[in-house]
Image (cartoon, rainbow, N blue to C red; front, side, top):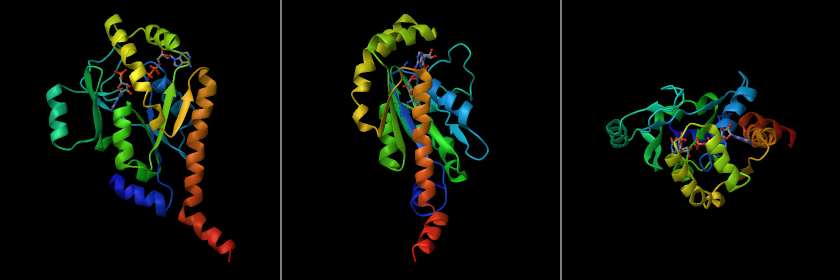
Length: 221
Ligand SMILES: Nc1ncnc2c1ncn2[C@@H]1O[C@H](COP(=O)(O)OP(=O)(O)OP(=O)(O)O)[C@@H](O)[C@H]1O
Ligand SMILES: Nc1nc2c(ncn2[C@@H]2O[C@H](COP(=O)(O)O)[C@@H](O)[C@H]2O)c(=O)[nH]1
């Protein structure tokens, strides 16, 4: 089922998964929040899944191909663009990143909520194609704390951190394009707020499902 068909389903029929797009300047904590959300709240009744992106960047120590990213060559990435294999893609910092169609199609229709950890350019592309997507922007409590987090993560060179810091304000200038904004100061509080958004969307969608719509119609006769 294509995402367009899924959108029709969201609007007219039973529970499909919700698509959540999460963006932030590098180091604000979006990957940590998504990881914690899945670890604490994914269950057989309400499954949550993160889409694994493709990237041309080199793996960091400890990153596994197929788990953190699909690490591909520039040539493979360009071939995938030509074959219309990406739902969205963008150049972020000095590398290419993209969400393949395969990573999300057929998942939402199974009732699985899917999370995309992508930049603002990708978020904009997703929202244009799939307005039912819910977009969340994560802000750091301050620029100094953002830099501390990038340094503290200990995975990027000073040059890479400087590049990411130099683009942080430009990325944050897109915050108004998003449906929700969270300030990731205290981690567990932010996680609670993030989960509230996910729960709210799930409950809203359930209330719009045909099962509920039929019951409500009967009750109101
Ligand atoms: N609320 C928080 N308080 C303190 N440290 C945090 C908080 N949230 C995340 N961190 C830490 O900040 C660092 C960056 O977090 P993370 O890797 O999740 O950021 P990100 O937004 O996904 O970055 P990128 O876009 O580069 O992937 C990590 O070391 C993480 O443990
Ligand atoms: N548009 C997309 N942006 C993506 C995707 N996957 C990750 N990203 C963003 O890239 C930066 C850097 O990530 P890092 O792993 O090198 O730290 C970050 O903002 C990610 O959200 C994608 O598929 N599409």
